[in-house]
Structures are given as C-alpha cells and as structure tokens.
Image (cartoon, rainbow, N blue to C red; front, side, top):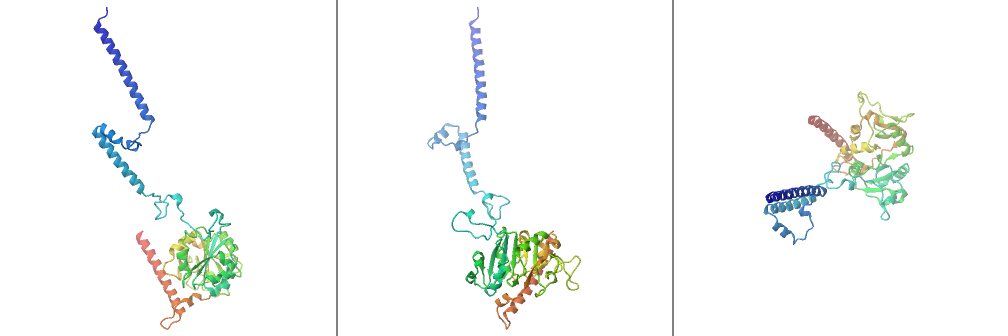
Length: 382
C-alpha cells in the first residue's frame, strides 16, 4: 500500500518538471522572437501623446531616466544630421554641402533657347573655341578671319572700344559671343572669361590678335597637323613678309612643323630654351584643353599685356621641346597694327602709345621677377 506522503511528493516533482519545461520553452521562444524582429526604440513608436505619461509612471524610475535620456539623444542626433556637411573630396571648394551628383562644375559658351526642352537646344556642339580681341576699325579683317573657322568653332569677340551693335552687319555675328570692356587687353579678358572650367568643353582654344592675315590658313587643316604631331601649345608660322620678332615663329618652306630655331649668337643654349625652342609668341597661340588649364593659372591678374608669358609657357607642358611647335603648313601674316597703342592716354607731354609700350616692358620685368621669386621659394619650401 502506497504512503499518502509519497504520492504528494510524486505529484509535486511532476509539477516542477512541467513548470521547468514550460519556462525553458518560453525562454527559447522569447529569444527567437527577439532575434526575428529589429529593436524598436520607444521614442520611435508612434504612440498617442496621452499614453506616454502613463507608461513612464508604470515603469521603474531608473528605466524612466534612461528613456528620457534616449529622447534627448534622438533630438541631438536629428539636429546634427540636419546640420552636417556632406563632405566629398571630389566636390569643388565651397560645394562640400552638395550631393556630388547635382554638381555642374563646368560650363561653355553654347547659346541656349528660351523655349523647348534643353536637350533639343543644340543641333551640334562646337569642339573648338576661337577668340579675337577687337576694335570696330578692324571689322573687315575680322570678317575675313572668322570665315576661316568652321561651325566646329565657338566664336568669342572681346571688344575693347565699346562698339558692339555695329557688328550685327555680319551674319556670323549673331552666333558669336560678344563681351565688352573699355580699353582692355586680350589677357585681361582671358583671365576673367576663359577660366578652364568655362572652356572645358573645347579641345583647343585659340586666343588671337585682330591684326592677322589668314589668307593661307584653314583652321580645320591646322588642327589636323596639331593632332598629328601631338602639339599641346602651337601657333601658325608667320609669313616671311611680315614684321616678326623671333626666328622661331618664322615660317619655313617644305616642312609641316618645326620646334627649334637659331637665334642671335649666345641666345641659344644647349639644350635650347625660349626663344630657340619650346616657344611660340603671344600674338596667335593655340592651346590644348590641358595646357590651357595650366596657363590660365600662370596668367597674372594685374599684368594685362602678357609680355614674358610666352617665355614661360613651356612650364605648362611636359616634354615641352616635343609638344610646343610652329605649324609651317598653315601660316599667317602679322600686319602689326598697334591698335591698343591708340587706347593709351597722353600725359606728361608723351603720346598715348608711349605709355602703353612702356608698361609692356615694365610688365615683362615684373613677370620675370615674380617667376624667379616663386621658383626660388618653391626650392626653399621643398
């Protein structure tokens, strides 16, 4: 016969086992649920505001303090996120806060319509840019010159005499860009309106004077030769009948391109340097996009005549002796019309041109001094 006490012990033991199993199953199920769903902070739950105090009131005070702390941190995080900078190293300076995909860091001189869709504006995009710094007195020569450039060229005229509307007599003038500033030089214009990011759409940039004869010149043929020889900086040969300054720019018969010249005794070192090699004049230079990006940075903001610049162009081209040259097969005539001399001012009993020419020489000396100082400073810094 079984004792009643033993029966009670057996029942208790079985109940404890069932309770343990239930607790274990509940524990495992709880872990499973916890892993299956991401944590949802209470501060992110969309609860009615009248429920929040009651919840706070029912939980222990230590958890209430943590909850309030979490809310404060959430507000601070949102504030920080709203004010944070989007720092992307490739963004231009000043545009760090912008998402990179919205940035348009470059531009062009393509004319746009005021109607229709933007991608219908252009039937073609010119690949090259030519600029002339002009006065109205040279309009007929410029008219002839422009006709030597195909529709592949964007035309920009820089007007130093404030006369623009009169140029409308020429049909091509309607598609040209006209920029006017009284009594300014082409290097003044170039520094202010031909920033590398503005002309980045163009493979080559022509920055030419107004007194050039282009009877023997064709721009498209010229660029074919430039590309053939890999010239980064170039100019057409100057006809021998022209008044010229340097032997290097004088046209040679029977060759397409030359890259060296013999100047006066003692002028040409070995290896040769400007003006005997790696040299073109500033009257009619042609730059590749990459070369111009460097040259633009070298142009001094206050030295507007550009004298001395041609002696330093080689610093912007690696292997300058190979990639700077004069194209003989396409040549020009330099008429040497001192138009800007007349834009000077008579003072102290001197003619207007005298002051202009004096400043040209002074700027050349200033540019040389600045370059010498900059190079010495660079060696010192290194």
